[in-house]
Image (cartoon, rainbow over all chains, first blue to last red; front, side, top):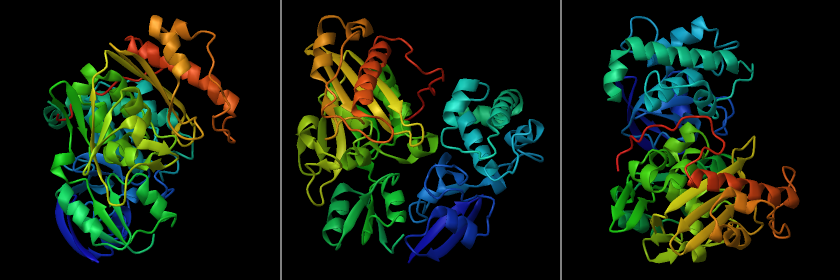
Length: 168
Length: 282
């Protein structure tokens, strides 16, 4: 057992867990943050994507102990600092970027990470598709997911001053 | 996953000491191979010694005319390194095509090299650039380091602390990824230096990474993709599986070598996607 201390969605949490505990199980079972999903458990599908110290990772393939001392943001706090929804969430809604919704938390977190890495407004369709390699949608709804991420990226370039500042 | 005990090392020495005191230890770097393997219960180390927080193993830097990459540097930081994007674009391109963005945030060059998966990308770059693999005990040339499938000269407890190489005049990589796993079914790294051209192939050899000397000879006179027209690679020592026969892999090697040369010459071989700006700290 190890004591793991994290800042999750802005809140400091401390738990004693087995060293083999995966971050995704820490989030879901210890903190009841069940928005992060386990799709494949083999690092392939991306339903479990969260941000660890500002970078998207697959939380089914990170030990909670590895994340000790990190700041983690999950889908539950993706909209932190926004009135209602994050522009990425709004775009997924507007462009019907989901059908069953199971992959959506990972898609949103991967999408936000993509905009952060390339800079708002700097994405094109081929880049989005290549960067979605690690996120699988079994409803095969990729067309609308790609549209949503592109729209959110452009919207964030226009209006998301917070991210623009961070990117500089 | 079986029970294990996690340790976080702050220095190479501490990591080595922790390993010495454990019954069946494994070093944990990004964990992108080790953790899935543990989940499948194919390995069950008593102790995991995390190397990701060892300061001396971080980042891309220059030492005189050598470029040095710390073993704990993740693929994303290699892909976006300004030093590598300007001086060794082939390696930055290679790193940007490993796994997916999330995997690239965790997986490290040291872990990949130590594991020596026959379909991993980096061994080809290390051999083509005649790199030196640095461990906590010695320096080994890449050609001596990789000894076979998942096999290296690493001894018990030895740690890959980094790699060092001279920037080639030109570098490029061509990869045909398995559509499901994204691992290379054939990956070819080309490096052109004042001493000549070196071509190394991963994902295809039945004994791991190897040099394609026939293609090197073809490129020595004229470093262009056209020099490889009509060239072939002997398929007798290539892997065959449900994804590709040895003959198909032989054809892929030539095709990927052409793409690598196009990239090395400043062209755009296959990808339509943009490259992330150079943002990673050196």
